Length: 104
Image 1 (cartoon, rainbow, N blue to C red):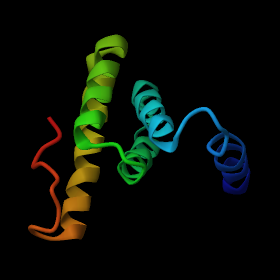
Image 2 (cartoon, one colour; image 1 turned 60 degrees about the vertical axis):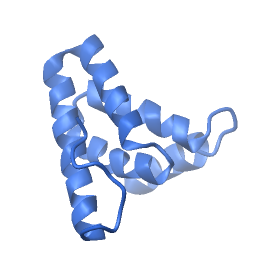
Image 3 (cartoon, helix red, strand yellow; image 1 turned 90 degrees about the vertical axis):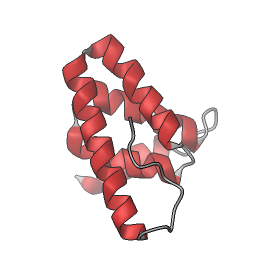
Image 4 (cartoon, rainbow, N blue to C red; image 1 turned 60 degrees about the horizontal axis):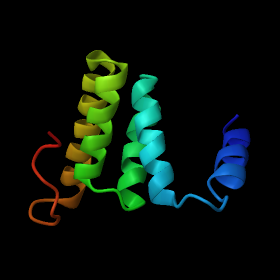
């Protein structure tokens, strides 16, 4: 299954012209939050940071989603994103990055 996903998503969609990786990451972050797909959202939050999104941009995307799809999905998205950011801070060690202390 993963091979099919990789081929279809990464090979056929993510490599298309028209949207850069940062824009695609922003869209995916919002869609996965709206769909309440926590495991995939966690993967894509990390990917979004790697693709150039800032914590502020992720926060604003999640807030926008929360207003339109409901606070339960939005709050869960914030929880997941904060967990990912905490893991990244832990991996980087103290003083090694410029990430804010909290997403919200």
